Length: 331
Ligand code: SF4
Image (cartoon, rainbow, N blue to C red; front, side, top):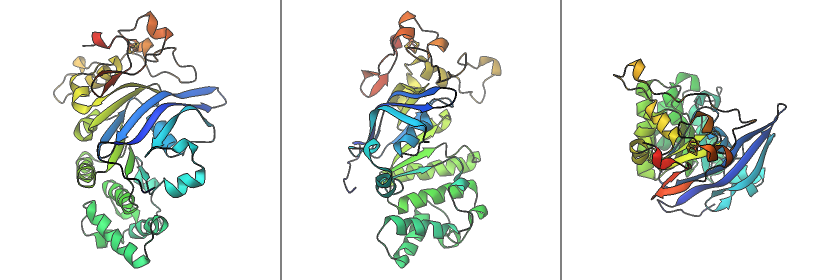
């Protein structure tokens, strides 16, 4: 897939994606019309409580869902090609690893414990690129250097258990760069890292975005990380998109009641526990989700129409989208 996408142009476009899981308990309506665009050279945060559909959206993009998943509608366009139309072999050979890569919370589960990391990066290069072993070995060292790992030669000989969590995540990024992926999906990549290591890792991602024009879909529920690293943020709730805006607009002027609740529930360092604002209630079970706007049982602004009809995403100002009938009332 040689097509180039210019910086600022859509690289990944998910349009009206509807997806369910068939389980013994019933049908889980996991995604209900998800719309999401990741542009070339942007870090796009995808946030929301556990179970809101963030990870399902990313796994659907890579065709990695369990067999009980059913797509009921929509498209996942990557460079204009609908990934939902591709066969497993086409995804494996043409998309996963070489166009789109994914890193998870725990890098140890992605690295093989019995090979040194240099070997593992080299294998990926040989799998996806037409390089001989000598060239691949040279590339391993330059990629480890690109992600700011000290002494790449030494690091390349280490086994995963000899590296810290932050170093392993950087090895995963080096592997992704070596395979020349254009889009990185990072699913809670810093959750298992110490705060200082987390800061180093985020700095590397930011530099890569700026230097290499890398696009990143960054899945998290950590609002501090979002404010630190993301350009654009999409808020999900109960398998639906609540709001999308650039990070400054979202933090300054959240217009969906759920987005506002998320931002206001982040504790400040000097804040007393009595001053915390919380969102009442719990996340809905998606086997029988609330009708209309799925947030209505927890929403202080809800009116009758919210139970009856799902609000569509509306552009309330340039590049700021909200799915709420009463966004103008949200302060
Ligand atoms: Fe609340 Fe209604 Fe807006 Fe949903 S549509 S967020 S229930 S006010």
